[in-house]
Image (tube, rainbow, N blue to C red; front, side):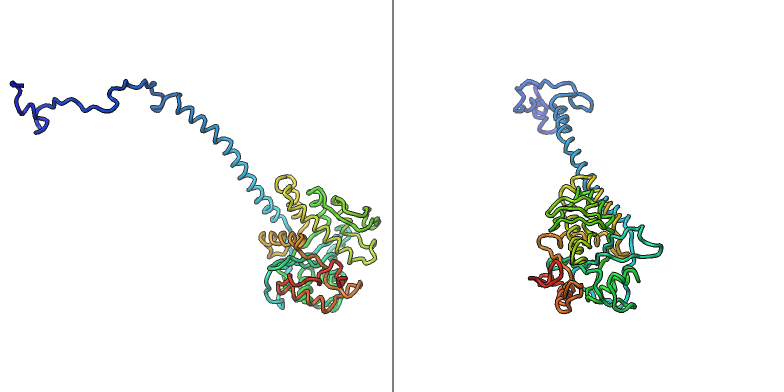
Length: 364
């Protein structure tokens, strides 16, 4: 120490000389160095814990990704199929033009059905509608009201005649105008259904339930069924909606049967099995599209609203009626029918009460 110069001894402090201090000790200096494996590609161990974690991560997320892809494909299928079906629907001009009732609350559809076979028509003949219904949904219960085809009403330009003649004279436009003129109810959308096509929908859902009150054997409609509830295929459901001569009240019972068939279709279509079975879902959508014509102004949202309204009307809380009649001659009851029309046009279906009967005649 005597030979050592002060500046050498304290050079580390004053910025000169060498630093003879031992390096600082850490807490792990006494531990042996770790036994590290040689680095692999990318500086990571070729196997070991990290590689195992990556393998487990891939195996853990693989099934989840597959399930997610399947779910996305299913959702796309549920959306694309009805949109595709909509593009295949035929359209018809049903706007009667000027002189219509003012806009009204809720949504009202004119639903027209025909079971006429195409082979029975001559060229240029529009045919006559066999079924005329008004479907309304809004603040109250949805209602499906049948208008018997032989109802005598005022048809613009043709005087007093049967309401189904309006379609033969002027197509969907004149029929819509006649319905609005005689009921005061504004039609928002027009839907025309061919019962021949609906039998394919019935078969696609595996049949529907019908409940005739008595056994029916009718040669004209080719219907042969026992009394009571039973499953009906497409041909039987079509015959059940056509039969008329087997009943004493003719068209009055016929419109009830047609509403029953539509209720069965609506119930089966919204069954969960329709949405989990892709073949059934495809058959329902394409079959319905092939049997329906819609108004030119009706969009996919309007079709969806129609389907929901029909489901509501045929459900437990809905109303399924015939226009109030005075007697079996299908003359409208002037007072009761006007009350019904005002309730629908005013979106007050909750007040209809006993005005709604299956055959249109007063309750009791």
